[in-house]
Length: 242
Ligand code: URA
Image (cartoon, rainbow, N blue to C red; front, side, top):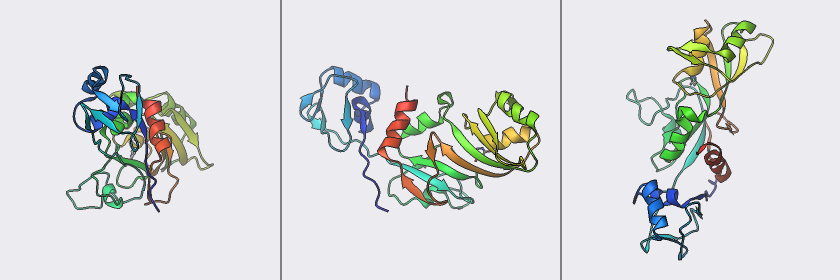
């Protein structure tokens, strides 16, 4: 599969900061001071967006070279660790993706959890999606050991105590008559969150698959990966960046 060419419209200050010459805040000062040009025209508008493939951006008349950002969706299979390097030499999620760039996973899925995992080299993107305050939705298919009692379904929605803090799923659907196959949506990513939520009510999670993360679906086979589209990346920034 030929990877899609990723061009993105990004805020000028972010583009400058990506080149490593300075921070985003300082980049804004450079813009206001008239030190930044785009395609040979000075730009002093902080909201200005540049095309990261086509536009020629100069700071103090020197062309800058921002780091190319990569964004992958992996449909994580079982038996793979969510890390960049495993001390026990087990296969990692990064081993499954062919790229020369250093990328890392956005958050984590357990060794035997399957489904949507994003990987990137864009620290800002990763922070955005892992910051608890941003309440990023994560949808899971869960198989549990016993039928989910209706009162427990309500408790999962109203809140259970996890490590001394109240925790909820924002949605809980029963998928079949056995009541052992459940779909849940969480907006927090504490380690083992889904297993702990069910564990708090005496259920054991037998199977866990993340169907969606931040609106991105597992639309490729298990073990496969693809680049996120420009629209997906821009959509995530638009929706969650303050
Ligand atoms: N919650 C879990 O318990 N495990 C995962 O892998 C993801 C969410």
